[in-house]
Image (cartoon, rainbow, N blue to C red; front, side, top):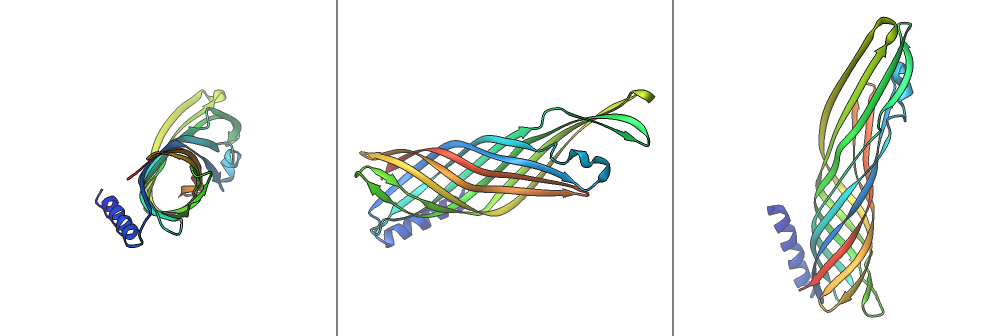
Length: 231
């Protein structure tokens, strides 16, 4: 919270120093999407390459402060978070171990992939018909947190020897990264309020390597409804 307060104070001070002609707060609510892919160099389970890949979907939000300068450039900052989930569903494959026929059943689930943290923004306000605004902007996430939590289910069956066992497990990986996001918002202003919709290009990801296994989970894009108010 202290970092967020410091960022907003800095943006506000910059806006005052450069004689901002308009200042506003905003709240953005929407959805996010991505993928989680699995690859292995272990020849005994190479058949799982691409089989455990799955799409991710979930929600996203952000809030913050924006100032429009005399030159129509905009500056500001805020806090954002996106969280997505997904899973493969049960997937079966037939093979053999030491010559014994085996049926393997898998399920790989992304319990949570998320990023969160502070961001600064810089863009340009293109106004048309007096009340419509297109404000393309770049947002830079500052040491944002990234979290991947996943779970797996594995069942091995070898009917010829009466073997049938299942196992489950979970793991959690955290990291920190700087984000580069491109925002494409279109909004309508009336009185002191603003409503709109925007597309977000870019997101965050995390790569986990465990021996011969490699997992790459990414939030690739998002979209938001925009609610703003002028000071």
